[in-house]
Length: 300
Image (cartoon, rainbow, N blue to C red; front, side, top):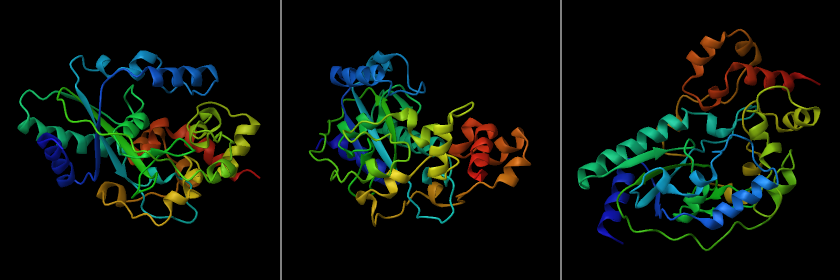
């Protein structure tokens, strides 16, 4: 391992980031073909970056990019009976948490590496973050298309740093999930196709965030999932997520909100909703979508 990579890992570990890897910045034609096929099959939601070149070519983000630092952030804090939110929503908004942690990493690296340039992303950049995590050796793909890690299962969030330093690259792990197909069998939207592909348009996590009216079929899927934002079913049935440790990241473990009550949300103005929940990942779609989903849960 290069000295610089050890310094990177030491910095990350000191800042509470246990999982870190590095991948290259070469344009991936293989990934481009995969994304083209997904688009042709209708396996897109419209929330993705629309420019395909930007999704597969990191140097369109930074012309002199030399490597991508990829970090995984575990968020599992336990199971809560009656929860109607996905587990990643329980703590502080991961966008805020991860961006701050990665900014601290970059501040430390800037003091070690002269002329260090970087761009930070977490679920808001054009690149395919799960692909980056796989290429950086963070984890391996599950049938449900999630990235699975040996220690924390798939209950992780991903952030990455496109930068101009040539860190030594890690290698993808030569392994897959155990292919038990439990995620396929239990998915309420029949979104998991069993071949490492999903149809995101029928995924409950997407449907709980979709604006406008839902079809009767989509409403029925939401009722099965019993969540007003997100979905954890494929992760809850996954054997790789059994007996995993809870996160050590305090922002994910403290001040938890595990459910939203209809009466409380109903009596909130949009402004108060943003004020009370603006630091939570479920707030980005606003009160209207959340309230619609809560109403659906109440219907017989």
